[in-house]
Image (cartoon, rainbow, N blue to C red; front, side, top):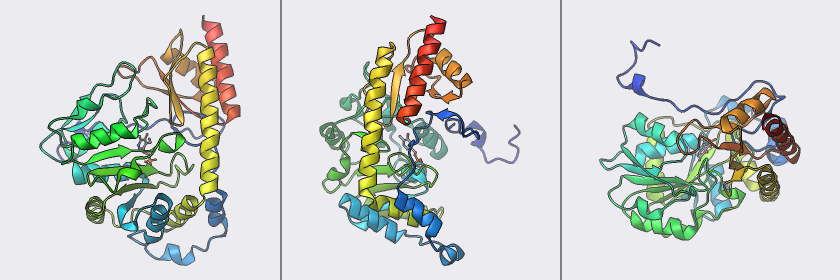
Length: 357
Ligand code: PMP
């Protein structure tokens, strides 16, 4: 493609490639860690009965006050300790811009959310990847030394491995002068959040999303929590880039969803139960399963191997994620669907493995 009109550097960017989003509603979609259940009925009811005439005519609240207050209330913080963005991807981008453009390298694990290196390229941030241990867990000591900041997903993506709060605290203490971001996109599926550390660590930023445990990936709503100076930094960047990132409808729907604690707890419970059942079923088929605390499982299938199984499942309209990258090339990442969807996945894996052995 010709980039004659592009600014210098754009041609060298290697953009993030999200998992496939097929048009057909008929496939079993276990490739982008969406929630298989509909969102809170309170959020859905707003969409059918809400009066948005004035809300749509006007610009939305640039500060998203009502939503930030609901999030603060839900997590025991002050509204001034909450920042909201158009999906946590946008919150991450603004965080990289605001905190990590430094002479020292940003530290992250060698297997991690693949958007992090892309933001580094976009903003010219140098980085160093610390290798995960053989079992894919994090070696906290590797995050010591000269650094422009640290970012880790907890649980990690795409491994599902969980880092304890003591380890997170050790990490924060290793880098007291740099921002440490804990990307908790998947924390609600069985981990303990680092939100409880916010009031003790001025360098901690915790990022959440409504895309996974709230079943609202289509709404595009993510949020960061931290002490006020960090949130002020993010607001400054946002207001210099896009002052109205959260549309009026999303602000109201997200506020309703955040308030529905009972729905959220029930949903997470269902996904966790299905994950545990699916882990056992995959092991029974001969998969090596990495213990997961997320709404997905990273698992190594027996022969004919990950790529062949991914392609065979795809032919049968079942989408899982295959990563053609070092260390996890032999694995598939399988998002947790409904029990029925997981039974179909397991049944099809069984047939494919039997036919190819
Ligand atoms: N962080 C991690 C670790 C993720 O896996 C994802 C989803 N791909 C995101 C952030 C972004 O989620 P969203 O933009 O939908 O909030």
